[in-house]
Length: 374
Image (cartoon, rainbow, N blue to C red; front, side):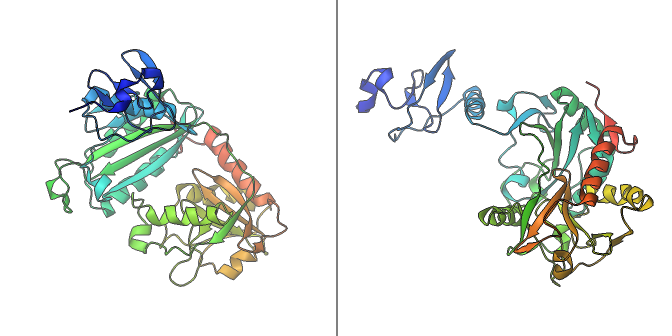
């Protein structure tokens, strides 16, 4: 068979970079790659080829590594644990999971996240308890007991040398096949990854809208599963409308939660008000806020605290509104749909609660702070 015409051109003029050892073009989306110690640059306008390379394991890993290196990212992945290969890797090219893992093709998995703050895992115990509770609801039996799981997570954080970031971890029914039932899975799996955010934290006031994406039913909303398509669509809807997040309402029309955070208000009577957790995810940061807020009541910044059903009208007429979560911490909401909240500025309670959480992260009790032994 005759060689394609572009192979007859010098390498400097060839729009595809060719792996000479295999006489095959490399992926079109690569902007650059290393081949036997040499760096080659692929031109942006490439022609199509009928040749799809068959890669060895080392070649596939090298291409994955190069692809990640060539993309501009706001996050770095510093370490990953996988019970599939029974260890921790700091090589991004090896941070992969099997395609036949049922978490990938059936969504049968749960996850959680703990913040890393100045070498401390914040609320790891609380997040781990919720994690295992989610696994129980999803009928996934963990491969390890709680203490072993915790030890693995702490060691993964240690291997990363990350001082500030987050530790995210998953439990899956595991790899085995592409069937619907997990009965063919060999063993449930635990994965964990340490993520370092390269962008600074942002606590500026934001706008939210009411989500038109249907909320998950309570059975699924109360567990932290990997089935986040409704959450993603809700977030996208917000961004398409110039907002930061979209607020879900429950089936009765009461305020529920955001796509990956809880919501709270300060009433005109100066009470902190949160929706009940029986139909939504029980936020660890929100529950910690409910403990720390007692200080604001004691010093007179708040009259009291209420956890109950909240109507949309009541929420929009609040003195203050905020989003609460491990990612946003406590962030002020200045506008909901067309309604300006309060005076349109961050309120003193929102700011005070954020400062309480940030202080708790750095100097809180040992019950919420797990030291990472680097």
